[in-house]
Image 1 (tube, rainbow, N blue to C red):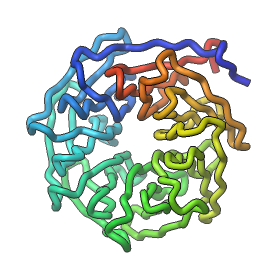
Image 2: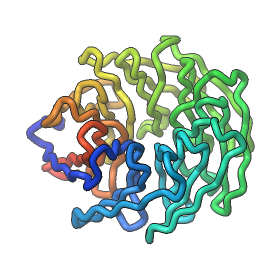
Image 3: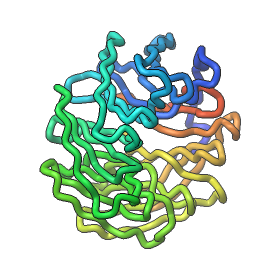
Image 4: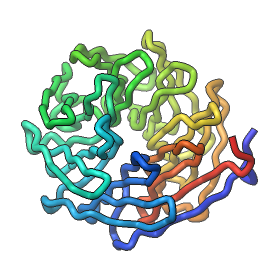
Length: 302
């Protein structure tokens, strides 16, 4: 079992004050890419620790989530700009406007169909965009459901969280299904494919981690911390799942059996947000309040 002494922690301070980094992804050459919501930039952190920032063409776009696309470019949502953006590894940016400029696109992921999928929080839709920029949108039954984060499942479908207390599933052809969470106002937030074949998600309003099977059976696991606000979650290479605790400045780990550990970061007020894992098993995450990119590594290796 991993303990706090088995982990090493490092940080990389961003050059822009008030950057408010949120989304984070691993690039095609192992570099770390992230959004800077407060600075209207996309950032890149090299393996050598060098940081480069790219300013978006459109002011106050609110870049939010980011993912590596099937075309080996990085794709991101522009929350306040109503667009999806694409940035090449060299830093060339293209923006694609959505049908509703006030739809508030939020989560984004690469789909099993070689397209990019994203959520539209305000308009209650799931969007799909091809690497060439062709757009299609699928409306959920209730426009106030608040689709938030999205991930590709092992079943070949896309799974997403809804602020209204549901987990949604959409096929590559746009067929939608929704599943109620046992806790109706738990605030489903981050979501990821688990190592056990199930989908795992965070519930930031009630401090729980949820698990849903492909049949829609939901189990919830309570966290030991109060007011911890679990945000993003990712499957690690160690067979467990790792998540950020936005409200308590910790990184958490949950086994597929529901056993939970939490590891405090040096600054409890750093507000860890999004999290990803690289090919070596290192965990990279954004720290919103300190304009920092953090990294946790297992000392013993994997």
